[in-house]
Image (cartoon, rainbow, N blue to C red):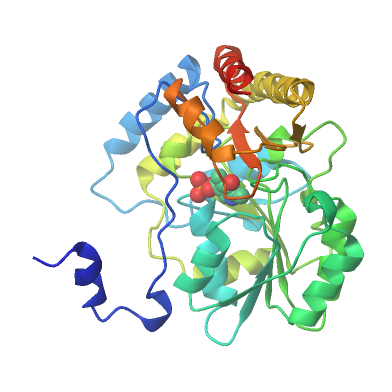
Length: 364
Ligand SMILES: *Cc1c(COP(=O)(O)O)cnc(C)c1O
């Protein structure tokens, strides 16, 4: 029997997919999972009860297709985000990954180019290749920062049709200044580039960090994506969304699959949104642990990046793989993002954070 690699090589796979590797953060059975930036608090009891009740009701109508326009969800998302947004400016899909894929399907594709600024979210190049979009990259400055001038130059020089700005950035954790977003938008004027600000971790931002949602008025090519996977502790439910000009959501309707958001997904999302306050209380608790990790890593002589997210990226390790493995042996799984001297850890509950910090101190 051929190995699965040989079997795959025998398939008439699209040329541009040959040799690519699927997204693959390890899913290991470890007591403390701090590797993929999930919300480790779990779903609070009142949110759980509300979702069960809403899903039970939705189940009674499962013989019918769901509301294709997810009308109630758009209303709830607009109310949750605020900033004067209206339901026709909201779009949702099965995770913000699907939202981003739909954006590429509508505005990318063969003959078009997307640009990213690594190290950044590893899905951008995969979503680009899946949609036949060329993906190019531009370098960041010192300590992974981005400046308005450097970003504008990269956007202009690349002639990109789609610009991925991840803020707070995964894996480094730091948010972008809005001046960077504005500069990217203006530099994309000639190519009429779509500027996507991926705010998957927006709720975890530090006081005073502004959301790109504030820039939406008057900028029809600006898109801000969010997710319920992180702050809302609903990674398993697969709900992501974006806010943009109404004509953007019209464009996305052209590429979405019919009835892409199941009635169960819509019911779960709506129920969770009615309990946003409970969920955001856990966000505050996670931010406390996040700031604690930054302080304690500094005390250990490491260099954590400033974090506006629910994770901390840190450098200063001689042998990150040894530390990663040592933590795993101690029952703590974190992420090796492949950047020399560095690792990334999700902020968990107080107990999980303590376990991580203790195990790390022992290893150093
Ligand atoms: C986790 C994450 C997402 C969210 O993906 P979902 O499909 O909504 O679960 C999007 N962007 C970034 C940068 C992320 O880290």
